[in-house]
Length: 386
Image (cartoon, rainbow, N blue to C red):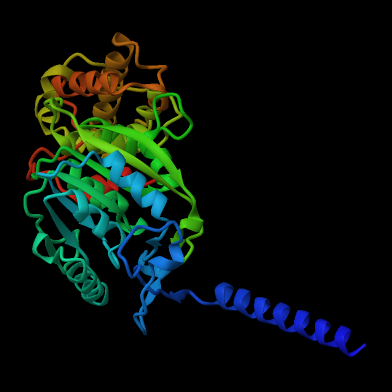
């Protein structure tokens, strides 16, 4: 009887301890992260052996601090990145250095950009212990606001919150590179990989694929991170195209923003909206300056014009006349190219480029031509928002 009582007590204690651990994991937004290495320095498949005691280091989910801990996934990232011994690799958000150490094993040099000073200290110490400190350059700054030194490849576990602006800085920036192997939120990666006709096809895919090719590599479970995020991730590889279309990026981004605001709506319906026509009329200054010549002989009167309002009749008729003229001009462009019934969600980049070119040739613009034409990451991020 006593032996049975002891057994029940032990079972109860184990159950209580387990429930307490679950309670801690569910209620805390942060979790202590410990790093370690084997005494002999050899690789191990046990991720718990890849931890070392650094007291008072907490990872904050709100800051996107999710450390990849699965050695097999880390090895796959290195293998699929195709790093040469002469390459300089840019890593953004290295955290405590799990991926950094593996990068240093194969690359000539690693440039790590990390905004958290606590992580910088841990990273520097770990790298020094492995004897790699002479090949690591750490930049303790915001990756979105600092200028990157020259690099060949990007390999990184990107913080979810800065995916769009960081992607813009890479693919539309002035720093040339061979490829970027990025671990992204799975939903974001799916949008990035989408093709015309896919339900996820959107501005993000259109804008990035204008200048780069995107390849899916593999999915990564949320259980491979510490602390565990709410969603899974996907690894993708982005390769800048050797040749890109000769198009004003600000004009392209504004055009795709207009088209994809209602991506499943026909272009004919989109460009009938009075608000959109008024915006285009303001932006298309060349068209406005020459519209008086084109408009001569054009019937500006509509069936519902009110002749009794003598005070506003001239201004109202003139404004409405310009809008009707622009609407018919746009309808003519869409019909002549067979675009009137097309939907942006099913159009290729080549078709969209063709339509934009025809619009511009007709004097219709989507971005203010007086503004400075330098493309910015902020403009791109805005153009890719859902």
